[in-house]
Image (cartoon, rainbow, N blue to C red):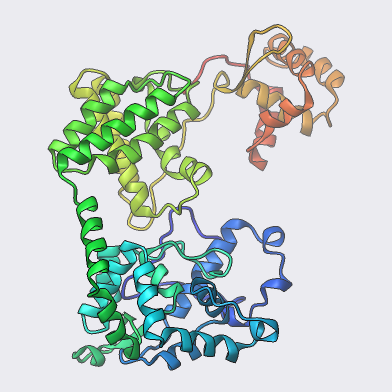
Length: 478
């Protein structure tokens, strides 16, 4: 099973994962017996890791959970991760002994001085989440936490190798927080459905509360709060300085001018939107423009399918963060607002803005995924690859026509250029096809492989049909 690029894993109350029949229980999985990096794709592993994590969170939990009960049910791989987080170095057989690991964690977490030190060393955002839970009586409904402190998407399962990065994941990795489902009767209501809750073990709550009221911890949290809630003017200055530094370091001239970016950041700040968040998405947009610079040498040349490709394929290939549906939509919305701003300054045409707005609306219309926009079919002259010839110093441009000829050569002619050239004498626009074939013959095989990359199986059959029966066109649809 594969997870789609725009799937989301819900960290709220109710999860709607389908059953995964082959690997339902992560505790029965021997990680050493499967070569994950070779036998399974990275995408599959990410899906499986998220599946196991969510399955663990769907287990029953008591809001008055004790630490001993919590540790006894902790997955082995998470218990080992907790030992690493608390710098507990077990030796010899104890390193692989479940009882020894649980006992070491129990002893460490029930030591008031050790637990207080752990609270002090927490990242401020994780400590803020912990404070919310303690102030709530030691447990809180999970959706209330994820709403204010972010979800746990991407935290996965293999915490011993890849520790979770979310605020709640930081607490869970240290065995300070446990997540599960409890019935609504526990919440003081009658009902049939169970809801997810985040629970701090009951016997740790008083010690954690004392640690959170320590003056040094309170000062650190106040300083962090002041940093996070700087004045709009300070945030705007930071965003503008970041953008200016980014442009100063670039070795190419992007179609999107710095003055337009600065104007957009100022307009966003004036509208009450955090300009630093806007700049994050603008930086991605500029990187994408560099990627398609052969098609978008001016901002007025951006098309709806470009936005679609950026929010789906490009971000997944070029950024390590896990892109949820919401984060993709945020990126699309920033592009929409940017083009509205560019139009107000007459940097783009009304037709371009209309196309971008239509595309953004269409992309974000799906409930569970992006409504992707495909490019129009290639006519033949569309550029797919350029290079500077090291011998002549001249630019060489390779199009879909070159790619189609390579596909036909590999399929119908079994990589025999001579036979293919003879066939050119009886096909439409054969002379022009033969001229391009001579260009391909002179190419390094590695460049031919690059031109052939990322084609579908059906492209081979279409290329053969095109070679024998269709004219070579040198115009472009995009």
